[in-house]
Length: 391
Image (cartoon, rainbow, N blue to C red; front, side, top):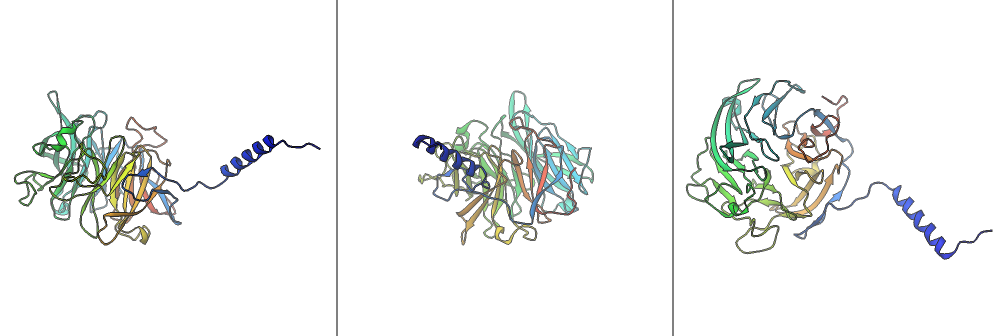
């Protein structure tokens, strides 16, 4: 009969515990600590009955999307194309091709439909271009002509641009004005310069004009002190605009916008409580490369418990994150959940569809990801259909 020494017994117990741990279900955990004192994000599965379907595949760096009233989906690709999904099929011919400066993070990015698109057919895009040796971003209007967008008309140009930190998410707000996020164009000092359009959130009329009630007379600047905001949506209960913003090596931010306020970059990040700067509602360290964001509305397809929650995409950390906010002001984070950790790779755009599904895109062909079969893809989260689309 063999006897174990104390050392051998300890080694055996250690191996046994490791094997048991390896056989457990994927555990809950965190996706980075918080610098603002809120709870960390749990890694969770999605509720029973929900799943992710591939709407279309074979896209090249999709950046943003918009839904037309007649059921089409318009998707921007960063090399300069707008693609159209019609009756569930990605059309081979681009809806529009725009001459852009496509390098690194620069190119064709944001898209938004005019609130009266049904009658005027106007849609707006934000993209990077070159003028001589200088790099800029601009916002232009196209007119829908069924299978294509035409009549390219610039409403705002010479926004400072670069191969990185261009912002360029555009959305029409509940007030009917067009909002645009701009990055610091790799020059942080511009974010603190009210004479520059870089590092700001801009607010303008549909023709690019300055609204009379903007916080600075004669200026498009709505808020300032931003680094690289890439998500923008309005809370469905309060109507307040929220942005998601890339931090440097720390403090990815979720910010609630207040007109005329300074959000700190590069003098402050996160929630430091420094007078003169607005603290973020959520600050993530280490950063996840926070990208597109949308509030859950149209609750017929997603759980009632998700109504009013903020969903944002993470590029570097390859997940969606669900953020529950506390009433009545909805400015304090109650809980966070990490969804689909690593399942689809880098994720960029997040938009609620008019059908109640949550749509999001991969960004694995952007030079920083590892393309998978079918990339890049437009995906949707909701009740699984019996015959999912896989185009």
